[in-house]
Length: 154
Image (tube, rainbow, N blue to C red; front, side):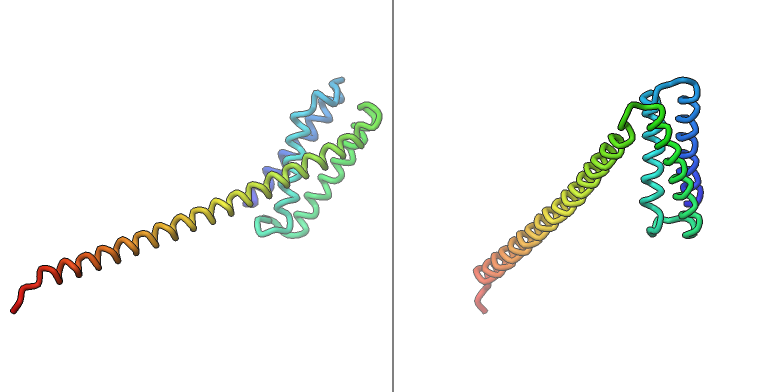
């Protein structure tokens, strides 16, 4: 688990380093979309796991990882402001908030669908058990009637 956290932080650091290098080499910010996606995916994973049962390090380690990401995001903000078009950073923040809301809604819908499927399966299982018990009861009654009909007088 600790190696997993280190790998996520390394991914974020590598992605932001690649963005800086690409911009330094004269590339446009739009050419860095894949690296920015990796960075924000890694950041979201760190934030999600930080403070949860999935957290692998101490609170201090998690805090320092998040602080480093905050500093890197500040550098990214400056890159977007100075190397992008006007209001690019504000547009990015709006887009990121909308994308997060959409992901959260999709995750919530997925959870609800899973719960609904589980309820349907339980209802089906309950129905099958009831049908099985009814068939077993009918077989027992039929067997009893058969036994009564074939009784020999003494």
